[in-house]
Image 1 (cartoon, one colour):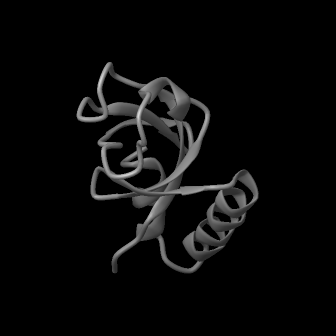
Image 2 (image 1 turned 60 degrees about the vertical axis):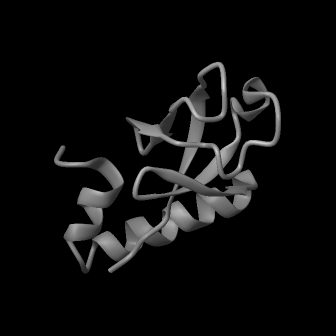
Image 3 (image 1 turned 135 degrees about the vertical axis):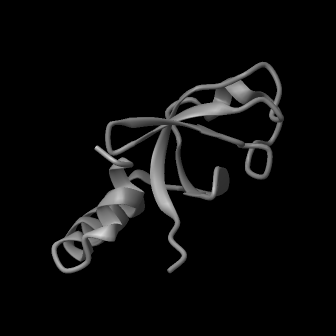
Length: 90
């Protein structure tokens, strides 16, 4: 199963090629934002991104991000492995 998981950018590097820290359900992950960052990396802080295998694939609005997280959490009730994608091994 391939999943893109919404996360909120909390810190960025000096260039788009530097990894950003993204909060995904309380877990901080290193994510490459080069595919979605247009110019100044600081403008990415606070934005929601769709993360897949360590890369931000697109920028989401907050409502879409929260709706997607809600759907993934509902999936976790019937498929335990979804929890590992959301929160790691915690």
